[in-house]
Image (cartoon, rainbow, N blue to C red; front, side, top):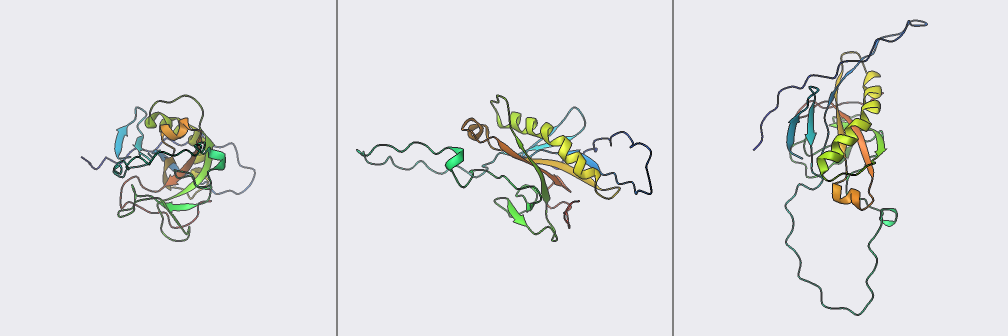
Length: 202
C-alpha cells in the first residue's frame, strides 16, 4: 500500500557567515533529508522524511535446476576488486540521473545529461563502516555521512532553492561481501513525478 506523504520540512540552515570581505551575494539553499533504498516512507524524529529503497525491488526469479555433477575444481567466488560491474548503483560525483522511485516507468537508475530534466545529481561517494544487520541501518548510516557534502553543495546554489539528500547504497548482503561504497545525491523532489533538476549543480 502506498500513500502520498506530506511535504517534509527542510533542515534549518546553518549559522550565518561572518562579516563579508567584499561584495558577495548570499546563496543559501535549504536541504531536506531523504535516503534511498525501497518503498517505505518513515517520518524521522528530527522532522525530515527518509525514503528507504531496496536495491532489488523486482520479484525474485525461480530457482534454476541444479547443474549436473562436475569433476572440475570449483572457481573461487569473485571479490569486489575483480568484479568489473558492481551489482548495485554507484555513481561518479557530478553524474545526473533519473531514479525509478522518482520517475514513473523506470526499472533502474538511468544516467541523464545534466542540461536536461533529471531527478538528481551525485555529489559524493562515501565508504560505509561498521556492523549492520538490515538495509535500513546502512541507509541511515550513509545518510549521516552524506549530510556534510549534501549541505555544502546545497548552500552553493541560488537562494531559495530546496533539495533533498538521497543516498544509493548496497544491500546488507552485498556489504557483508565487501561492497562498502555508497553515493550521496541531491534531488529536487521525493515523489514520483515531482520537480526535476534542469542544470548541473554548482
